[in-house]
Length: 263
Image (cartoon, rainbow, N blue to C red; front, side, top):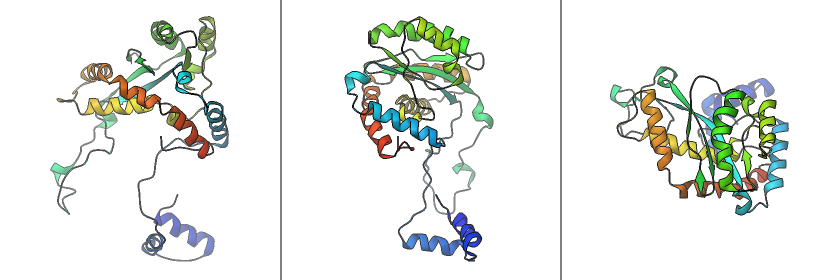
């Protein structure tokens, strides 16, 4: 990935060629390269790509009956004042810095709320607002697994599989011992793989619906209520359609040789 300045500096350092950044941009344009905002994704080391590719190959032939056994779970932090770069305005040329055309930022997003949730084909768990600080292993067992995952498992049936990421609270020995004790198998999930977890798209949808709510939440209490309300109102059909993308996600990861994908 290059921008004009980086390419100019590399030409100067490696080949001793001194050119302007403007010249570099023109040469890029001549060969059909345009200037775009780069896609975002976690940095993947070789071990990450190997594990992602192995997972995708192992699950590439799973059909929807097999994915239906999985409860996809995750935590998500939601800012009260979320600036996501999607907001667009209509203005005249040269009016970018008129005060009425600013989307004002708030320090630390005005505060935030951590939530946990789980989705599967045909249903979802309750949305849990995580209060009282960091999610520890003990809290994860007491407030999430005992209260929400274990009671939800019979809905999926005897072949229930829990998908959770590799957060420290999830991978703690006490958590693994508890899940083994209650007989809940855990999917071996590759690290740094949010693009493979369909609930990430549900979080994005939830944030957008909360942000578009009128009037928007003005404090954390209102934000929590809005999150609970919008979670309950998310159409299950949309969630199911997102989960149905899992076979395509596996193929996309394989084509990317374990690298980041468009998801």
